Length: 125
Image (cartoon, rainbow, N blue to C red):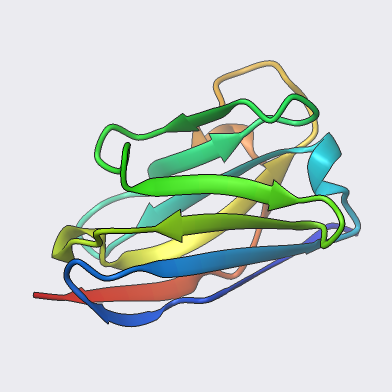
């Protein structure tokens, strides 16, 4: 059974940093495609970043490119999202997602079949 557990969210001032963690069980993060998405009350689920299995190719939404970095620690079986220069518009619930198959777009939430419970990130202005 795949379980994903996010942590690291919180309240931070604009310009600050947070690092989100996604601890996985029942799945080896290096052999799954992993991604981060976020939701707000005003927006549907929005893609943030992905990291592909094995090669670890990464991709980012334009809104976070240059500020956020996705990475994984195979020994810890954890995926991270380092968020720098945070902006109030980054306020959202952030979710970790995983899938094993390679067909389909990596930035589409509908292509992922395993999800965590989410962690709240609030950026004050």
